[in-house]
Image (cartoon, rainbow over all chains, first blue to last red; front, side, top):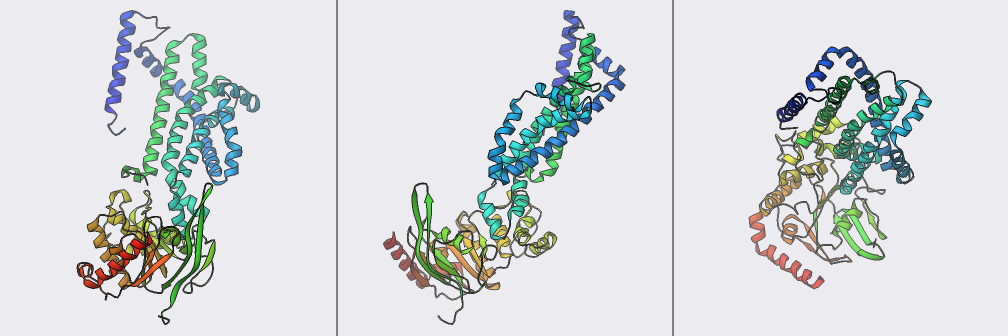
Length: 252
Length: 257
C-alpha cells in the first residue's frame, strides 16, 4: 500500500487493454465475453440503475458487517474472559462456519421474508467468525508479565482488559476485520441470490437470465470496485486507530 | 540496629512450585529484615529464588510457610501497595512515553489527565525531556528503562522492588544508570529492594547486601556496605574497602554453589 496506487492501476489498465485487443482481434461473441469498452458504455448508460441497486447492496453489507464486528468482538472478549464459555461455545462457532451459507440463506429468507434482514444476517454470519477468532488470539497473546505488573498497580480484570489486552489485540482484531470485509461482499451477493427484488446480486441474476452479458460484467465491476474501496477503507481506519504501528519494529 | 525501623520483616518463608509431577523448592526458610529508607540488594546465582522473593514482597504470590510483615505499610494484601519494577521494561507499544509512565497511577485510580501531568513533571529529572510523545520503539534501551522506573517511582511507594533493572543494558549505560539511580534515591528516600546477580552493582548501590544460596534459596550472608555516600563510581569500585567486601562475597558465593 505504501508504494502508491500507480503500479496497480498501470497493471489493471494493461490487462484491460489486452482484453479489449483480444476480443476485437479474435472476434469473440460479445454475448460470451463483451469488450471492456462495451462494459464501460453499459455502466455509463445505466449509472442510475447500478447506483440504486448498489446502494441496496451497500446498505445490507454495512449493516451485516457492523453487526458481525460487534458480535465477533463480543464473542471474542467473552471467550477470553470465561474459559468455560470458550470451551462450550467454540465448537458451535466452528459449526456455524461448516454449514454452507447458500444452504442457510434460504432459511433466513423463509423467516424474514424479502427484507434487508436475511441479507444482513447472511453477511453477519460470515463476518463474525474471523473477527471472533482473531480477537481471542490477540487477547490471549498479551504478555503475562505485563498483566502481573498491572496487578501490582492494583489493576482489576476490567482495567487489564481495557488498558492492556484490548489495545494489544487491536492489530490482530483488524486482521480479522479485513478478512470479514472481504467475505461480506460474498455474503451480500449470496443473500440476494436466494431472494431479493433489489441489489447487485439480484441484478446479476436478472442479466444472466436475459443474456445481457455486458450488464452482468458491469454489475460485477461495480461490485468489485465497492469491495476494494471498503477493504482499503478498513486499512485507512486501522492506520488511524493503531498509530504506533508505524514506529513499531518489535512487538513485546 | 534496634533503633532502625523495619519496613519488611521476613520470617521462615518457603515457597515450592509444582512443575508437572516434580516440585521445585524455590525458597526454604528465608529470614530477612529490610530496614526502612535503606537501599538493600539481594544477590545470588541465577534461579536462586530472587524473583520468587520479589513476587512474594509485592503480593503477586503467597508463601507456603512463614510470614512477611510490613510494619511500614500496616497489615493486609500487599498487591497494589508495594512498588515493583520487573526485569523487562514492559512498556506498552501503543502508549507514548508520558502515557506509559502514567499507567501505574491510572490503575491506582488517579484521573488519567492528572496522572499524565504528574508524569510530565518528572520528564527532565528522568532524562526524557522532549520524548514525552515518542513511542517506546523509538527509544534507546537506557531510556526505556528510565520510563519503566518513572512508572514505578511515580506511584510514590514507601517500598520499591527493582528486579535486575539494568540487566539488559550495556556496561557504559549501566554505570551511568546506577549513578543516576543513586542520585535520585538520595533526593527521594524510599526503601529499595534491588535484585541483581552483579556483585559490583550491588556493592556500589547498597547499604546492605544479602547473598542468597542456590535453590532452595536462603540468605547465607548479609554485609553492611560501610562506604560513605554520596558515592562516585570510579572511586568506590577501586577502593580497598570495596574490594575487601567483594572478596568476602565471592568467597561465600564459592562456598554456597
